[in-house]
Image (cartoon, rainbow, N blue to C red):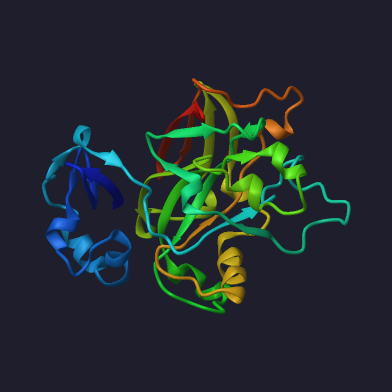
Length: 282
């Protein structure tokens, strides 16, 4: 089942992707579940029961929103793939994941425009699998971690590399307004047999620039969920981006940063394809 948040007729809605159309679950479930995050808390059985219904709106009439527009937390794991430019560490192999937070305002949805900002020069892409939490938890064990997963989506975890040198923290370089993207939907966990056996392909203007499997993660999904839950409550709708395979601009010999007019696609097997364009900030 593919769960989406979207706008149609000027109104914020959520529903189920169904072929070339969308089942308007927000209308079917009513005011008890005003957002997809609310429906994930108490209405998943109702959502599953709607999955076989006929579409209410045509695909071409909607505008995608972030899968969870009101996520409480968006956490990201940095340097989590076995790629030469991501795991080199003077202190030896990583003992714990590098976790940082991102603001919802730093992302655009599927079909949107990632902004190349005035105050930055080195806009990079990072295609990533994102875990969406469906069950609240704290101090979650690795053995029970997957019980807390509602599904999976896709992220372009865009980064302003030049801002990584302006201080000691990831926060500024990772949180420029509309510098990344999430979408297009959430594929529910029951549709993914093994999230550690998926393939990530990032295309820049149609050319493959990232091509790697989730089996190359240093810290797997179970560990990331367990680790994050030790310092914060994980809530339904929270997202954990799991890192990016090699092939980013930062790791290339010839660094040609993203610029206006380019297109970017991140495809993950069994999940879908996130597509955006690049625009200069006005």
